[in-house]
Image 1 (cartoon, rainbow, N blue to C red):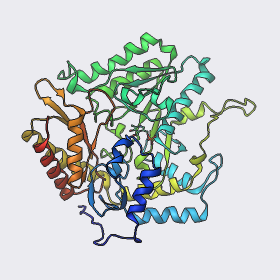
Image 2 (cartoon, protein in one colour):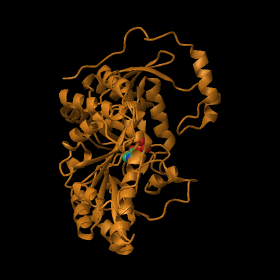
Image 3 (tube, rainbow, N blue to C red):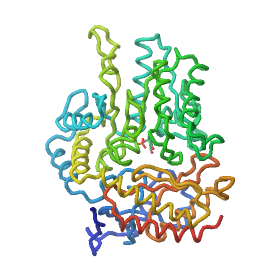
Image 4 (spheres, helix red, strand yellow):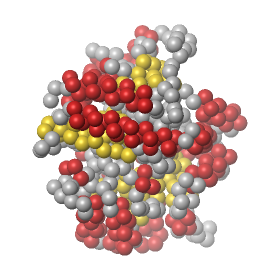
Length: 468
Ligand SMILES: Cc1ncc(COP(=O)(O)O)c(C=O)c1O
């Protein structure tokens, strides 16, 4: 059983000139997803130190981080000296060489990783989730060119899913507020409907998962099966509202894809590396992917690394007589050759195994779900609670009967209230005009009951004070 870990009593490190750092930040930083006008009257949040699930900011306020670094990343928790040492030792030995050559931690991690992914055997490194997904799309486009005169080049994506921030990754993204003002987008990306039972007219039908998946077949037939190369899906939709596919969904998607020769690309950027209680989210469902992408939790944020993992069959499509000059995968990623990423990822994986964190994610995930269902009995604003393992969403509604979503400002208010209490939760944020109403929890896989009770107490108080 894991125990809560605490920060040292005294703030660690050198004396910090708080005013100077805040002033540097306000003068020169351009923060992600932030409207800086609000920072003219407030100071930015600046984090300084972490241990386990606990963080300390520059003003010595402490927090319990219930979203693993704000973005589902720090799966093994803060302050892991063994990962820092593994990275240090590798960096002093050799920090970098282009990944057209090999390096020791890259080969070692690739071997360990595919050992967790039956049916997959090739690992292509890069350094962000967006980039890993783009590699998947480039493989599909090049394969189309090599085998089908470029015809099978279209890539299908699903409503509510997110696959990254670059223009082409956004082209495969269904969250309209993330896309606003960034078009025109890359052509050849086609949307299918989501599979969220809670808002579907037929969502209570036991056959809903199969019905939702059959929308894919309609779209493939409309577009022409000869033109569709792959489908990209989050195993469990994350920022789109924590959507666990209903029973039968993935099995039916899988059958349809095999029928029309469509490759299955699963985005595990959030769910990978134990978040849901299995190594990868897709392993809960009846699907065998051709391409799997991952980032965030594979090194828990201790180094930047992402990977695009494929089958041997897909890899073999790119093998040819060297005289065929354009037949190999002509892609590169400079920082895909950093050795710090695989060194951190190897140690991260070792920790997950040694500390049995998949089991902990299942047990603590059940406990978290149970405690949220208790809150649902108490607070009418909670319309739905859904998730798997330590990845749970709480959808807020104005009225349970109509399931009308609360305004984004209500979720923002609950988030701010929890932050004030020293608990950092997540929320769907400026993704869809009407559905920014889901709170997200994804504490580190080392969390224990005391941590979860603390999160629930903060949320309980915030729900009690929420103004709808
Ligand atoms: C499911 C999913 N895929 C891809 C990405 C993009 O990853 P990155 O921000 O590392 O580019 C994200 C980021 O949140 C994500 O949630």
